[in-house]
Length: 548
Image (tube, rainbow, N blue to C red; front, side, top):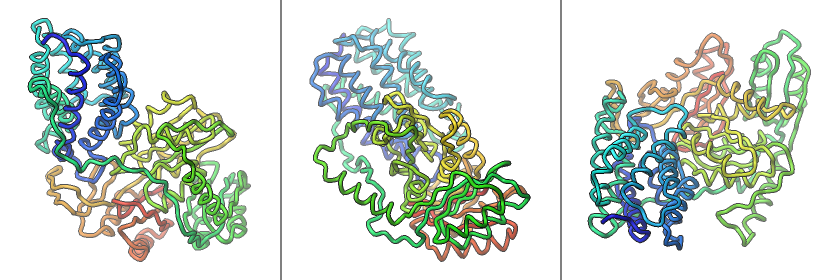
């Protein structure tokens, strides 16, 4: 067979999608880090399956146009870093073939070279030993050997075998893979796609789906149905410091007057946020530190009732569609934050987040989810706070898909996102605000307490499914018997002589009593630090711990 027509191409895409879906759990299990997260196989499968469904509904006999649809759909469905990189591979592949009605050997070679180039451009700091290596070495094989092939099926088989050789070399390039005794998960996902296409060509039929457990996450709005609001007034302001009094003294004075307290200090100012029934008392204490600006006090009971009313009105509309019409700008700035957990989402709303995109560690929202949120915000400039390292790359794609200006603040956890939002100053330019928010975010030390999602051996430490883990950045700080022991180990590692505040955000799988119990121990151990207990309600993580 010398060429691929559109009918064959449809079969190959369907086969690749089914094969990736059927093998997603095997790919998930290749992930080295044992925490529950948006696993590679699941993210790649959600990306490609969603794109396949949209593409195969396209009525065209033009191969290039069909692939262009696949590329556009892959970008919008992209989830997690692996899904975004896969979408860029598809985009590069499609771009080289956009004028082709049928596809020959030389066209496949050109498409693979373009796929490699586009994927590498999408990643700021490419890491070898990953999916990038596999697409690069596969394209290099195709470029060096395409003249030896007339039959396109034989060419695909040779490309697949070259890709497998590259995949098997990834542990030699990435020490973490070699330690764990696995190949790269993203590379395995890409080879699974190539394999699905090749088998369809060789057998004349697409692989059938056998894994019916894959479901696209339904991203529902996070909202309370019953307003159980203990503290009525959301109080925010900036203190321009004029006295020698320490912010920690101010924080200690207002701690028992409310909840959801955030006090962030730099050399010249202190930014304050608290839910309280006594805003007057909070302000009196703040004045002892300096002059107040940007004072805002909102009654959260009325805000809540307005939000419920807006939700009901939105749900009653009959013209809801996946393609969200952009909201006409009525203000300069808007904010979209990724969050999971009732308490955390309410915190972001109280800091003026216009849209909460439900998601996080185990449920990475797609580029389309993020784009839809941006389009709903009636603002000229929209800041996105991903609050997770595996969502940043998907967020980075949004600006090119909308006429609005989108600025991604690359927050990798919830405390960074909260701190960044508090740094916003409407008098600054968009670029100045971005720099200020990044600076505030980077000043936050964060640790998380979760459970092991799989058995593994990490740096000589045996970890069993269900073990309690203290995670600090990219490291497992400790394996403990209880979440509270993990919190103690995290704070021991994170607290320095410069630290002033420890914040504990407790999740849905722990209790306020447990959180307050460990907070009391921390107060005893660190008498010079203020310890705050905040309800986050987050899934997966028993505690999120921040030190500032």
